[in-house]
Length: 107
Length: 234
Image: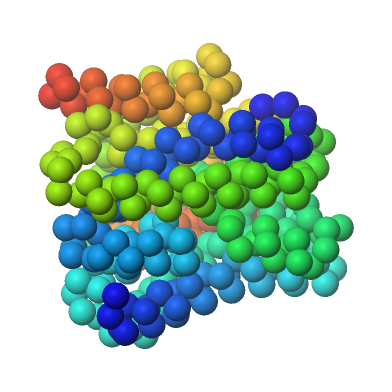
């Protein structure tokens, strides 16, 4: 490992750790205002939706995004598995299997 | 998922997300290998920085010989969503000691955050230090080991995508968002669906204009504000 790499690890680790830990320290010490608590109740659903969208759209900087059709096709059986079983494991396994089938048959 | 909050239950609950970590971790290891990063650098990135998608960005910026300061700034921007997630998650641990809060905070990820938010729907809004630590530690170890295995085997596996593992991450978020939708009784299905549609729309247009990671933040924040307004209207 070079000295540059060492500095990058230390610097990136510091900013990442602070982003993770400082909120815990502040929330413990301070009373949050009501509007912030209300805002935060929507963080789980919004961030999970945005992270899902990241897998379903392909960005083309400067132009409109397109749909990642391969992922969208695999998402259908995965979602059905979720509706039927309410199990995260089932969603992941069916999703992976669906994608492997799509690729195997060259769809 | 049940209402038990022990360390052992934490291990059981986090297992489905492990596939996502293995898939993306192997992919990262392989990318790092082809970008000529040494095993120590991969270990340092995974075990010390521990930043998932940001590790891919650091690797490509290293390859492009970008300055250290811009690599660190990019890492901060990509990970700034951690601030939102940690602030949300920390609400459940205010009664715990500062040391325990710092320990929990230091290993928060997208996945363990989402898992915890699912879990508290089954436990009347409670989480425990033991449960969260188990989820955090398993995720941390599996990620680190998967990236090292990927880096080690990097030369051998030519096309890991044919097994569909690259889809594990998206599948996992589909599962997590669906379970959140049906089990968050405080917000209800209708309001959540409306917020989800809004977030998807904002994200879709935003990625044409700004980077995907910035779009993630903008869509999340806009979705929260939209949700707050919609809730007032009801």
